[in-house]
Amino acid sequence: MSYLIQGETGQWEVVIGLEVHAQVISNAKLFSGASTTFGADPNAQVAFLDCGMPGMLPVINAECIRQAVKTGLGLNAKINRRSVFDRKNYFYADLPLGYQISQFAHPIVGEGTIILDLKDGTSREVGIERLHLEIDAGKSLHDQHPTKSFIDLNRAGVALMEIVSKPDMRSPEEAGAYLKKLRAILRYLGTCDGNMEEGSMRADVNVSVRHPGEPLRTRCEIKNVNSVRFVMQAVEIEAMRHIEVYEAGGIIEQETRLFDSNKGETRPMRSKEFAHDYRYFPDPDLLPLEFSEEFVAEIQAGLPELPDAKKARFIGDYGLSPYDAGVLVAEKETAAYFEAAVEGHDAKAVANWVMGDLFAALNRTGKAITESPVAPENIGKLVDLIKDGTISGRIAKDVFEIMVETGGEPAKIVEEKGLKQVTDTGAIEKVVDEVIAANPEKAAEVKGGKEKLLGWFVGQAMKASQGKANPAILNEMIKKKLLG
Ligand code: MN
Image 1 (tube, rainbow, N blue to C red):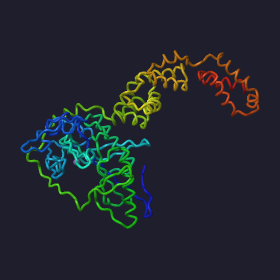
Image 2: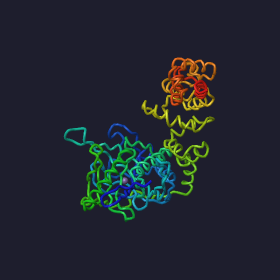
Image 3: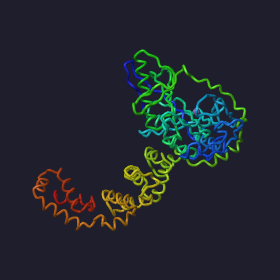
Image 4: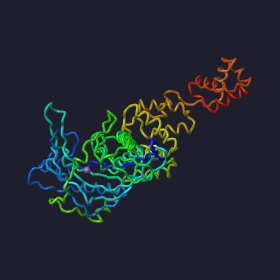
């Protein structure tokens, strides 16, 4: 599906690359023993190293290395068994070291790939350029005091993975799909919690435009976008800005911009004029990082089943469509719920209940699937009750609503509320006769050829049976009575 914007000078293609900073799940920071728990009091989790005390030496946290390698393997990427930590030098109030420890020329992970699952059921591959490890900076707080700024160093030194894509995306939808897929993979792996609202995943969005077939034009980087929706909006807005500038005869300067979601615009943050020269050099306090083939193999052996493999298995084992399988594996918890529900039941029907009524109910009640009032086994049981004719599909909707409210078991609800489908032809005939007798003019119209009214009779009779009449028998009976 190609996404092209029609301008006055022809069609424009949007070129997008993403740099994602993902906070590594680890109890301690990358080079100090300070805790990483979210929500602690300001400056409660700061080791001497993190606040730049002289003479402190970094000690690498092996767990963070394991997490980065695991992530690289999950991205089908090349693992570099030798990598180098560099100092990225700059002065900033919330960076007491005066440099960020990062990786520049020799990252821990090289090229890999991510497969995007698009809305139309197709998929597309996006290249990963690299993944490197680095430390986070602290946080300046400008809203705590009328005239002073405060600094919280709890984040300073926390391990981040910077995951850089190739400029392979061509639409806001693809950028959104990339971020969602990357987040899903990280969550499946347990290497980053992906909570964008807590800042544990942030995206820098690189955008340029060109006429199809042209070489790449100048890009702008939109910094620290913190939701999937904002990334998609930022891409759209920035692409339109480039097109307007080009079509007015202007040029785009390479610069870093900020996205203002309230105003729906991007604006310059710093331009080339203030371009940083970080003077990268290998950190003299840290030896190059080296690990063995066995270290990688051990991590590889412990990898969980990832979304792509799970999707293929759902298609193969359960006969689901690629679209349905893609939706169900998008979150690890949803996939687990589906697997617990489907065991021994009609998979397509279970998938429909999960993606339809259950998702709607969770949305409505603001609950996560792990807090679902409906136990997964009960979805399977509900599907069976429809299949064996105990209840109709329509009554099942009512039963489901009661399941959402009470957490009850479907067979019990059907029993208690007297919702069993009526398949007794005698009972159905009685209802049908009553409805026909009450509406002689309409019955005459049907007999006179106005067959459209048949549906009206079905509706009335179904209502009279309180929705419990078996629809097939009811239909048949009305046709027989009115058309002979
Ligand atoms: Mn970075």
